[in-house]
Length: 636
Image 1 (tube, one colour):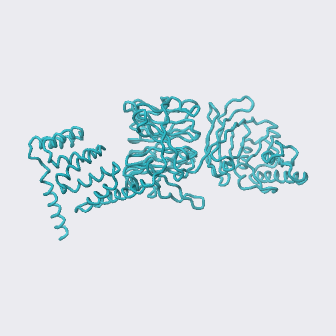
Image 2 (cartoon, one colour; image 1 turned 90 degrees about the vertical axis):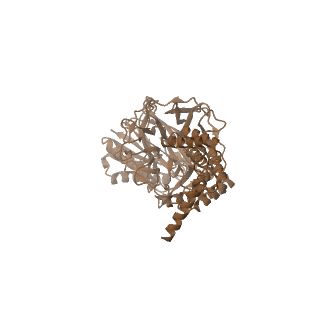
Image 3 (cartoon, one colour; image 1 turned 135 degrees about the horizontal axis):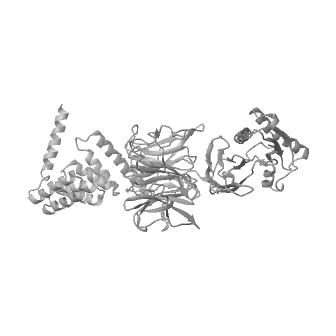
């Protein structure tokens, strides 16, 4: 009871002291002040500011009007003007009100004056009557001040480059996303308050003049924005707001590229979209995990990052919050999952930063090959992050370049899109890609074949899609430190296989291939490039399983086909040993098929030793091609 009386006494004394300058003896100044309060109630802030400026011009000791001006300038983001107003209040009466110090400190924080902001936040906390929520917020801001002063002493390399007038104009361009081969960029352009998507194609290292993306996607009545594109450029996820088919205020939609055009957008519906607000999607490289931002219940703050998985039936699972390792009681937005599928970039004003939204990166934590959470987010550093707002970052597949929007002096007007070299410390794992074209071997027609890429060690399917029906093209990303198997298949054709070990190649170097598919005919031959044995042994290695199961499926789908499995070696060693080894390897494949319920009547096997080389045995590359397992159609 005694503490409560002391608290009330101090509070009354504070207000009594403030009361001296909260009104004006100048009638016209008081009238402008009262009129400003009316405008504020209607959120007519510009008119309120004009009246308050009139009030302080008539009465230069009107601290209440200066306080109100400072609060309005701060609310509207004009922090430099807010600073002048708060300093005027303190000049008139240093103890006018505790909130003068709060407003001053927040304005200093948002103009990068971290040392003074810390002092004035500390001063504010010494006043009685501050509730727990305000105290927590101020303590968070004070930590930001301490973090920022240290970070500025250790700047990171940051040299943004305007990506050119093919994309940037006098309008606002922002939220850039780029395909894995850096061949196409899609971004948002705002014209007359309407947001639409545009695309640009890279030609001779320069971006071509941007074009309107699609009438199927862009509308004149609604805004489209906050988009992401799959690494192959075939799927666009984006945010559409207040559309007739929407579930809530803003929903997530998807469109698929069809040749040079795009399909009509499809609302992905519940459980992802709700009557609330869902936005800012980011799709994983395999197309199976969608990250997005939502204000739905169950989160930690206003805006949280969530994820949903693509189920086997094509629907999306109930979204899961990424948890306190990513989300705070403040706001987390603009997620970008890199094609390495381990590095998540996002913006936040909750983790230690420079006062507004900063850019962060967090990495997945793996235990026994399974994800067990996220590492503590790392601020990308100064001057990538500043006292302003930074968000909307995307990263090239090789992890070298970041793309973002900024209003800088060398721009073409408004927000422009820039790229910059990402500091080594905050780069994702290096990712390369395979880009191919599938066509009929005989008539050269493009084929919409099924494309699958498997992590050979884990057996995990990392890409599962179809080649473009009009161009036969596909593109899939791969980690540079792992080995992968590619399988291309289509009904009526023999399948095609290939394997890639990017780490054994130049890191980050892409694989560009042509895939001619053969129709199923007697005599048709397929090299099983993803069948593996240890040197001079015939036991199948585990990495062979995915391709062997594909062969099982092929034989089940084509029940009339009979095949011969052939084993081949290089010419290292004596001929009898090579003959025996090739026959044993062919038999190992034969036995696997038998054990997976393929009839013996459909199968035979034969060892060919070193008799039929595909390449010169004088080089290791040639010998590698000659050590192979294949199958041949002998009846259909």
